[in-house]
Image 1 (tube, rainbow, N blue to C red):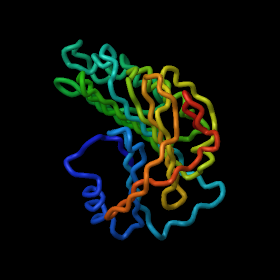
Image 2 (cartoon, rainbow, N blue to C red):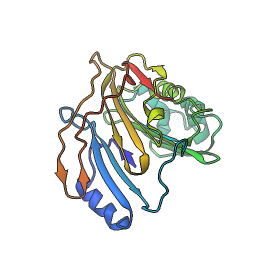
Image 3 (cartoon, rainbow, N blue to C red):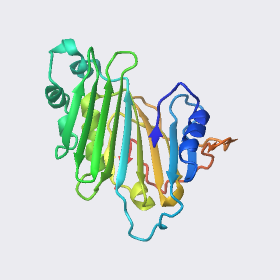
Image 4 (cartoon, rainbow, N blue to C red):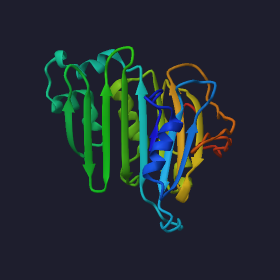
Amino acid sequence: MGSSSPSSPFGFSEEVAMLNEFFGDLIAEAYVIGDPVVPNRNWHIYSAMSAERKPLMNGDDDGVTLEMCMTRLDREKAGVFFKGSGNYTAQEVRNLSGISDIIPSHVTCDFEFDPCGYSMNGIEGPAYSTVHVTPEDGFSYWSYEAMGLDTGSVKLEAVVRRLLRCFSPGEFSIAVTCRCVSRCLAVEDADVEGYPCQNTGNQELPGGWWVVHRNYSASNKECGVKTAPRVSMQGWKEVAEEEEMGGAVTCPYVSFA
């Protein structure tokens, strides 16, 4: 699992310790990817897998997971998620916001909250997607996750563009998880106009999995690969190594295959 949430009732080390109590019989690792100079922009990862799982073989592919978190949402576009804006049904909110266009083939079940907010679950075969929206100005937030996607039929760069059209956020983070590092790092230019990359990093996980993470902001800052020092802590690790992306990041682009 991954998250860019800036805070929680517990620190990450406490959360990891609690998870380890439930998954103590699995191979578990925890990481934080991010730039220590930029607060509240870290990506927290907890990975657990069975020791009996077969090793990764050439050609193995369990699909791709895309996670995207957006903040500072456009006020006008976020307005549709308030009950008083038009007393829309959940289906109408889905259509008006553009959520229905993200992956149109997914069968969806969604719910609108009172006085504001929205949640959706979508499914198609082994793939699923989720959306959660908190639209209040000042701390607006949107999260999206899609897992088990067949990138032969669903192009991630197109999904990212559709997500950005829904809300025009001021900032967003992207994390892609897959079992094929060449797929995670391969270059397939998807222009994210107006959103220069702030920092990027990648981390190998147990079982041959990889996570590629990038932060973007609607500013004029340049992109760079940021490195945090390794810090050993009880039950988890902070990412320490800078791993060159081999040209996979050409800002302001998001590159997925």
